Length: 165
Image (cartoon, rainbow, N blue to C red):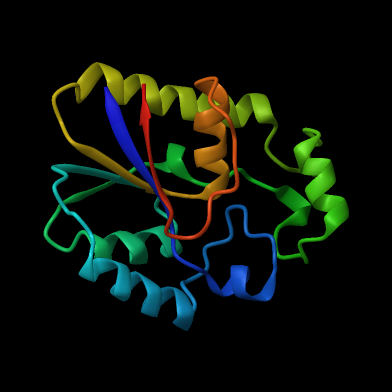
């Protein structure tokens, strides 16, 4: 079964190069504008939308899928980055995160992966015949790719990818 994943638009934290993790921040003005622009060419032929309950994903889903009921699922929240949340995103932190370092008081990759796997299993078991879109975060999309054995690449804000689960 195929599902479409979309990363939220630019947030105020993306704009300031701050690590978000599970910080509940809003879209930036640029993010709002770009989402409204994307809507003009957005193919909304989905009948089920799952979304992280954080503001930046909720705002993205509300603009792109105004006529679709959204199912908010905490399992789609970004990885908890503990003490690194609300701090500048540096090359050192990027390196440490890529090498699976767990930030102090952060969510481990095993915890994160287990939560994502739980969501994927639920979708596979209960939504086989639906056209599904998931509005979520870059880290969740990377985790899904990693868990499915797909090549992990940079996912830009508002980028959409379709995966087979």
